[in-house]
Image (cartoon, rainbow, N blue to C red; front, side, top):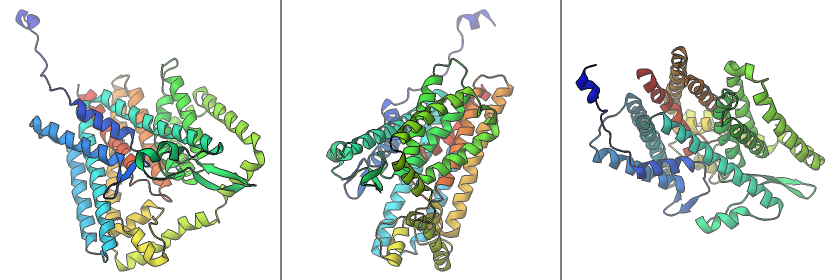
Length: 455
């Protein structure tokens, strides 16, 4: 090094500070993606997530324009390409609409899809620009929002047991709408409550909880002994598991089982570790104490949830019978986006009834072409998670300590995706905001941590 270089080292190229307004809109949208009950009936149902997403997209676009920044990463370009293909499929299905009601539902569905997918593309671009620390912050905010939702569900359950409607006291003054905890039935005059928290349905809550449970579990298991987050994560995972079980969601438990089966491949040696068995033992002890207080009550409830021939289970399988009939008449592009409820009303007379299966909705509303395109998107998403695991392996080979976080993160995201796909066999949560927030983290993981390899 020359004397001049020693006195005057090269300065890093200065970058403009990120807009705090854009950051706040983004993080608030991430925090509230599961709060479906916060909506207002203004020219249709406008959810809080809709407003925050629109504000983030506007602030993000204004920030890029003001800085004359037109750079687009290959990952974001791919997402925009998928957006264009999905729009082509949906617009092709537009020509299968036959009534004004169908047109109205199509317009609502298309608007929601555009907000969701633009949120995905812009969110990935935003996180990749901000780097590792912001990635972990985003994950933490998403988990915190779901945990707050779960905590509200516990308060909702306790209030119902005391004869109070917490939604009416807290949410109705804010939204002007009416909502309440789900009442599953009654056992000897005692009502059976299933917390739906801020999601609107206990099964939705059960499926949404898969994301923090399965993403955080491998990260927690790989934490070093004495790490400051070890105890808080153990407590959080135990709490979320208790809430998961309190929803009595069979789809949620199906997704959890599938996700744990995925994690069993790389983390089977941790399944008998103290780090896992101690929190599970605490959860088991708490549940055993609760069940023991009302043994007969819980015996009846659990027996009813284990039955497979009840009307609720039959309804979930019945919707699959519509697929051959619809594909026979509109095989390529289906009935039109967001139009299953219109078709279901025409067939059964029931209004505003969803398909209770993401895959039924996919085939009925977008046909074979739409289903094939989604399968292609899913393969690409799995490829992004595979790339994140590859980044983790390369970091481990280079002796980088961050590999102990990146590889568990990638496996946790893969497990959460597998669990969500399984749970959506009988429910429809993959069209909600939270899934797109999860997809942001799944897609952004590889490019964010690949920066460390280049450096």
